[in-house]
Amino acid sequence: MTGSEPVPILEQDVALLQGVLDSLDDPVFVKDRRHRWVAFNDGFCKLLGQPREALLGKSDPDFFPPEQVEEFWRLDDQLFESGETNRNEERLTDEQGEVHLIWTRKYPMRDASGQVVGLVGIISDITELRERIEALDTIEREAAEQRARVKAQRELIDAMEAPIITLWAGILLVPIVGELSERRAQVVLERLLAAVARESTRVVFLDISGLPELTASSAATLRSAVSTARLLGAQAEIVGMRPNIARVLVGQGIELGAVQTHASLRDGLHRALRRLGVVA
Image (cartoon, rainbow, N blue to C red; front, side, top):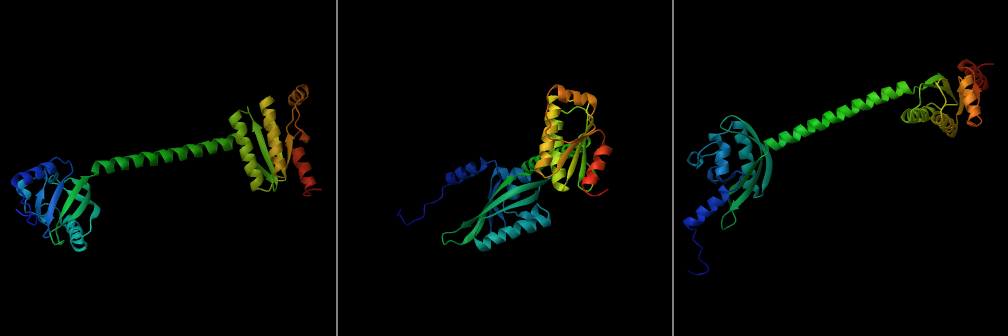
């Protein structure tokens, strides 16, 4: 035998190759240019639910719906004409009528002269994978919706716990009712900052008539609110100063800075409107 002569393919070589293909979990098939299956592995037989002898020499129209056959052959012909590998997501209906979502890779087979004489296809059944992905997408979407609901609820609670009321153009009221926790104090300051900036505020009334007692924490919140308003060009004033609150301020030496105070909101509003030239 000379070096130029082709090496014959022995029967044991074919058996070895078939054994290798059958060891693969993914279905593998070989088609000629007439779309006939000329070779395949056990995985392909299992996918179609047919014995080997029922598939050999047959083609897609013998087992699949017309619309699927049209798609399979369109992609086959595309490969035969271009000689290029193609990869596609397709649907395949098995013998029991169950529809599988498959990922198919098709590779050209060439003869000694380089002509495309057929193709090799490898199928991955991604039905379960896609279902898992869709399930995860559903979980993530529901989680996002839940986070949005929680955020909306939190914003509603914050608005109820720290309301900002427009009394007049450029005049805001911040009623502080109940205990001032650290979180609630932060909410008050954040909402105040946003409102002052949004409404070009001139005067902010901090109404403490609903504050049960003045603690170091609540005093710090009042100081921060005054500073926040001042930084944005607004004047913060305190209304609803009660004797017990005033005694705490004096007794503990708590300084609120040069902040104007009023016994009632009515007094404070009247003075503010007079300063702004709204009333005489």
